[in-house]
Length: 205
Image (cartoon, rainbow, N blue to C red):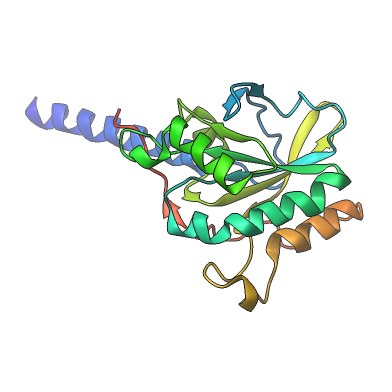
């Protein structure tokens, strides 16, 4: 009887781990991305469908405190300034639990957005449900989505470029390469790269 109980426990743990692995898989190119409704640093709620003129978005999961996110900050701003006029604005989402990372609280987000003059929304994923659904694991982690009818279809996921430290020494601009192909109406050749950055600070459940 004890062996049977142990077996049941093992099976339950295996099923649970499989379920977690599936949910952690996140979106791949061609998947329809979930829209969201999250609070911006200006107090308003932002969703992808809220801008009828958008052709798509560059969704970036990022934060205040990660050195990688800080190193990419000016490049994220540059992506918005380059592609927002072409219908693909940046939406930045902070996925971190402020209990685990106090520097990523909503108030600290407001301070940083104001100090750095973010030209894009900076949203708080308070429940972390959007982060889990998209499959973001690092800050920063990019998802390019293209609007197709009423859907937002993933075109690319991963890192911004191949140098997380020095913007002047970048060889491969992964997001810009993908955007060139998206804007030309062509399939993205390199649809996924490994996100480089700090691990997301998850809530203790």
